[in-house]
Amino acid sequence: MTEAGVHARTGTEAAAVPSPAAAGIERPARRLRPRRRTVVLALRLLAAILVTVVFLFPIYWLAIMAFKTADEIFAYPPVWWPGSLNLSNFAVLFRDGDWETVRNSLVLATSSTAIAMVLGTFAAYALERFRIGGENLAVWIISQRMLPPVVIVFPIFLLYVALGWVDTFHGMIVLYVAFSLPYVIWMMRGYIHDIPIELEESAELDGCSRWQILWRVVFPMARTGLFATAVFTFVFVWNDFVFALVLTRTEVVTYTVQVTHYFGGQSNFWAKIAAMSMLGTLPVFFAVATLQRYFVRGLSMGAVKG
Amino acid sequence: MRPAALDAPRIRASDRRFGLLLLAPSVLLLLLVGLFPLVYTLVVSFQQITLFEVDTSFAGLANYRMLLSDERLWESLLHTAILFSIALPLELALGLAMAQLFLERLPGRQIFIALLVLPTVIAPLVAGAVWRLLLDHRYGPVNQIVGWLWGEEAVLLWTVNPLLVYPAILMAEVWQWTPFMFLILLAALTNVDRSLTEAAEIDGAGFWLTFRKVVLPAIWPVMAVALLIRGLDLARIFDVVYALTGGGPGTMTETISIYTYVLGFRQFETSYTGAIAFLVIAILTVLVVGAVKRMGLAR
Image 1 (cartoon, one colour):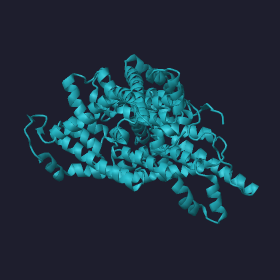
Image 2 (cartoon, rainbow over the protein chains, first blue to last red; image 1 turned 60 degrees about the vertical axis):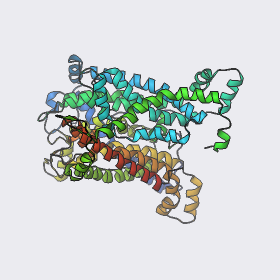
Image 3 (cartoon, rainbow over the protein chains, first blue to last red; image 1 turned 120 degrees about the vertical axis):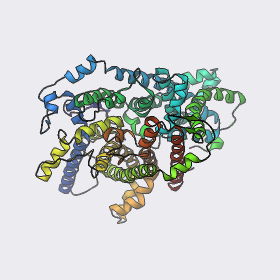
Image 4 (tube, each protein chain N blue to C red; image 1 turned 90 degrees about the vertical axis):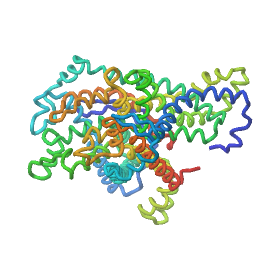
């Protein structure tokens, strides 16, 4: 099976997403009489198309809302196909500086992911190869992910007020790194487990120091795992809402918080909601498009091996 | 997994020091963000701090006693339980049906799967916002479609009408996370040994019997993890509800996470929020430990 970069033709929104899931492990259809087989296949295809249309329709609707003119947004009955490719909703976001919240999300997600990947991979290596702390430490680390964000963020907020870290990039990055670490450590431990230990042993015989083994053997060998885990970590931070809602004010507001600023009591700024959501969602679609067959392993926290 | 005896032969003291060095930054950060909040919350929950008063004297179990008579708290737990117990089976059943649909050869199979991933990676808050657009009583397409099926114009106030708010939240929730179940279960079903199901069929077992006796035991470990991940997320559900109803109308859809947020950040009931935080942690711990044991996930 090729890594088909598939172009999703859902109106104006076209995301290139290659095959995730169990690529290439298809099964032959059950053996039935030829005519009946064709009918069954046709019915299944029809059902598949129906399911896909239903699940993609909300995304299609978001996309066309972002391109609608004010008249089309407030038309009754609703307009299902916008008359023109109207970019003014996006232009407003850039004119008023609202797009800076997307930039903030990008800065936070990129730097937290980079730091969490390095620290998390170090820790995973120590847990997997040197067995430090045994299973107990590993279980404690993963259990950190169980805590509800709303519960953690409350004392963190009080701590950050005392430290003067509310609404700062470094404060948010520290929190995101710490919150991403359990996932990174858990996933990387599995990927490092898959690396044959003999490679490290022979590197050691060749006179490599421990740091050299780590940088020259472990990191390169685990690169696909590193990459897949990094994309997931990026998406988690990028999609966060609770932490940013509580801990940002004006300087580092992220795009998810900005979307809620457009909700109003009586009238919602539909055009801004849609355009901002689109700006925030497209990078995720592109990030996920690069994941391919590691998607399910990352999604299931390693329960399904790639 | 390889047996531990083969895996961990002799760990030298210098290896251990190197390992501790590698672990130190992560453990320190996790202590800061994982352990500090717990300890701090525990301490304030025994005090009497509110927006107006910083009373740090020991108040005993006063806040914990308040939990018992706080109707809004128990209602918010009930709301969370309602969403949990409807959404989780629905996502599982739909995801399993979809996985079955896409399991065998189908033209354009990879394209369908690639497209079905998309709802799952959208920010939950944005998913809520999208459904707000879809469910708008006048400018949204859902009421229009209902109108076509109904035969006359439908004016359903999805985010206001007490009868419709739960279906509205569930639609958004199930829409976003059914593909998650689908993808994981599809991978699990693909890994089921084909010769086993064929043998069962040759022996005359029907689809359901084969599924129950052969397929289900084979996919169970993966399915259990998927249920655990989704179950935990549902118990903490916040973003979608915040975007769609904000917990309203009134407090009709207020989940435990939303209530904690309101108490902590709108009413600044610091000490009482601490007590609720501990209640939530206790409930989640019991649920997770129970689930892990019952599902046979513990090693």
